[in-house]
Image 1 (tube, rainbow, N blue to C red):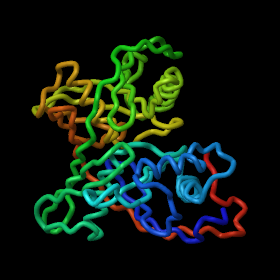
Image 2 (image 1 turned 90 degrees about the horizontal axis):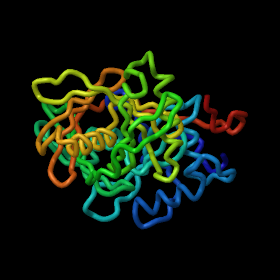
Image 3 (image 1 turned 45 degrees about the vertical axis):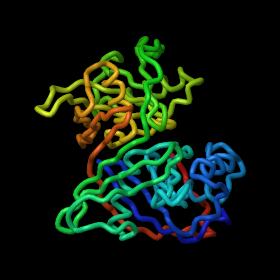
Length: 328
């Protein structure tokens, strides 16, 4: 851990309950001309979590995502230069197992952070777009303001495409139909009822087990997340669903999952259940809500709230036998 700064400063947010830890200083050099190239550099220097020789960036990821400074559900981002002057900044998304190509809840948190810190000037009342380069492309977080406060964020994703429908996947719960959509990362959607489950805190152990099994059954598809969803009664605004998204190696998204909501919108549009301009009320397992809207040409918008939870100066004591920490 000698390459990791002894003090690491972060600003933490949560978007609909899902944490996002932002680091925008004291980063080691990350070779690459684009965010996607920098992610490739990170992956080549330990991003898989199994490389016995992690690089300095991966030392930092482990330090911030593991206990006692983090936890197995921690998520965050390293702020890096954008691909060009068309974006305000870039970001490398990270979690306990490595680096993701997309993160909707993180994009929303970054939009709020950029405005709250003055990095992107904003009016006291009105909307301001924050353009961010992520590994999957350029996305926009439109930050909504009222009376000098950030009241919400709407994330416009890269185009989402349906990849496959009704793929048969075997699990210990039985064989289920799985739908695949790429919304910057590849998500599998499975109806929880087909597993004999509902989406609730009570069933989380079974949902996580099912998510891991479904992901493992599709090794050739580079699946990032498994969305286990259920229908709820329609609202006056339209469709209403609840989901839990299991991503990476069994992590649970506390939010309704931003890029996962994009995937659900594309599939519902393909089903004919949503038309351009229609909305989806999308709930998480903890009861928080995103509002998703389907637009033409595979574009989606996802809105919700993001709030700062703290600023931190994490210290690494060189005499600490636990070093970068541990995972349970």
